[in-house]
Image (cartoon, rainbow, N blue to C red; front, side):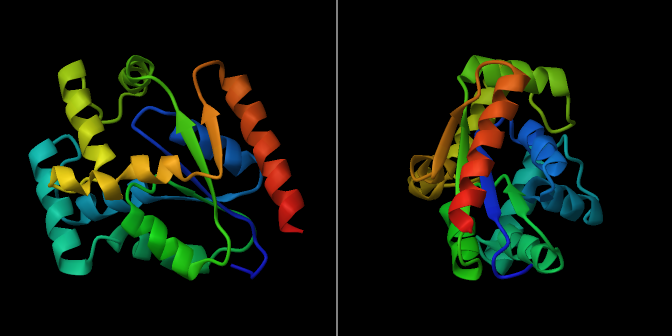
Length: 197
């Protein structure tokens, strides 16, 4: 990663459109680093099924207790250092991770994606990843976990993804079409590149 490479972070609650945005940013020439992919890689190495909510929760707790609450950000940064050109970091879920990146990267632009609960649940049902909840009750439980950055205590909400969303540089209401998301994202990237020169 060169000193003046543009680095953006896309954040949002489950089903807000992060995977879709990742594909769009990839087409715009960004190297995409997904924290969720790192989590999935580690689960696979440890023979834990992604569709096991208790096993995945325990694994996440143990790895954070052992290596720190910013562990996924540290794994991601190793990958970032090997890349050249603009970088998009997808799926930061806590202020611990965000603060780690801010210490390591000179300037990082945070883009938050927002969408209502029912819209997000509909998207997850359609995409069908193994870890995606099938019932609204389970989705609400996942949503609460994400809000506190997958930390156990409710008090951790002050370190969760909502805190990062509140302080984002840009916000996209992703409630319309794929084309609208693409246009909004392209406009933001154009502005960022202009201000980065």
